[in-house]
Image (cartoon, rainbow, N blue to C red; front, side):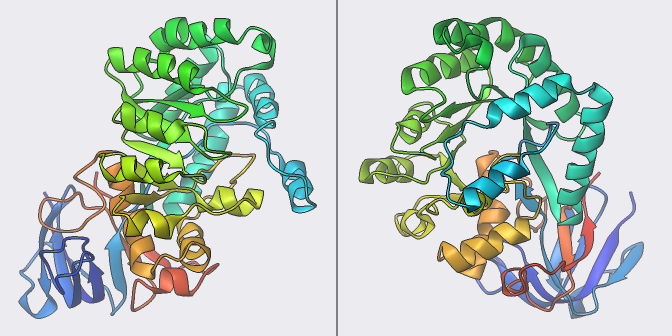
Length: 385
């Protein structure tokens, strides 16, 4: 297997606190690293770098772990820019537009869905994302949700069944029947997904409905994720902790009990600043969570209605500017935090044994990701095979 040595790294962020400066970022300067097609083999000073089959001269740029985007809805048809315009003119977000995307996605061919998903996936890759989670949730039929999972699986192993996105129009007056469909025939057709998710919030599913759906998914061995507390203190966070969910996402409205429960659990709070920006909603209390000892991740929430965002760098910049994270805290949340939200210990860091997923920045320090918002700083992305 071919080995490569990357030399003359001005600043190497490893996210391994046993390395470099001893901080949580595990930062080395004037660094080098050796990797093969699968994993990192060595890190240290450029002056100590061992020989390898190939050499890459980083030319004094910074190197960071590849971004881990742990919450996306990439497989959909259509767009909803008119809703964005209305929100910017003052209409609040109420979650009601999902049905429009459901109709457009149901009408699209599989070839068309693959084409548009490939484009969005390529945008994430170009922005330094090396691991992507992808949800279903825009067909809300047995065959349709299975189709979306098939398409998502062509781009990622981190695939999530989200039949419990909203109740579709045809079941508007028979919610119980739709819940039974999701946790019965639809789950049977979609149980190959790694994760099950539910939108537990105002206008979507209540705690009891969500609990029934998640229980069914857990019985067949699926990992649990939850959309929770985006629109109010609606019980989603407590439910996620109850189920030992890998992640509860949004977390805009939190009680003291929610924060305490998260701190005492292994559930990651995944924050989605692109959604808060695009809906002009209050930002999640990232500072409060971090100061309380809760593990925080950042993700794009790429979707057509509330966060048509494919830039993790943009989310980092918002988190630093408007959610009061430091540049390092935001970078950690977008890399190691995302890995924790997927319960992965092979990504989100760069040291011996980690996957060879990394980004060379066209900048001398990682802080430039937040410092220069709107600028593409990705010189090269390397991803393990």
